Amino acid sequence: MTTLLPKDDDNNTIPALRLADGGAHVIQTTGTAASNTIAFDDATKVISVYATAPIYMRFGDAGVMTTVADHFFPANTYYDIAISGGAGNGPHSSYISVLSIAADATVYISEKE
Image (cartoon, rainbow, N blue to C red; front, side, top):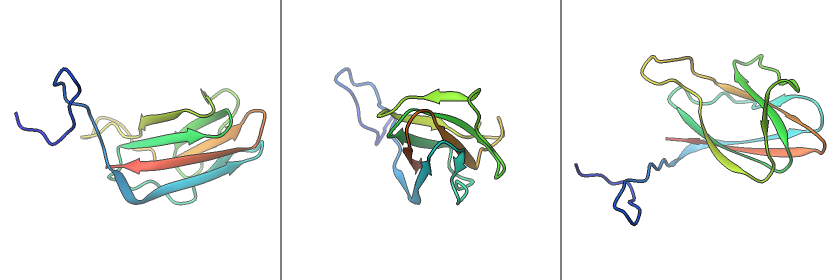
């Protein structure tokens, strides 16, 4: 099968997605939960997240709020996360809420296509 995706040294396809135009988000959190102000595009299935300090995060609709019981995300880690089940296999999360743990955090989010 022909592919345009890059391949590793063993000739295995490496899954790769482009950054979506207009899909960059920045969230500042200073000890209170904060969310992206513009919803992720309905077609976006994967986002990348990077935080400058440890945070908790939670996905959902416009009213989503993070608590200390939510998922931990470490500082200085770049990670891809699925926000949709795809093909009707689960809900699409349009928002991410983040909460800094010990220090103020800047969270950078990129929608991928």
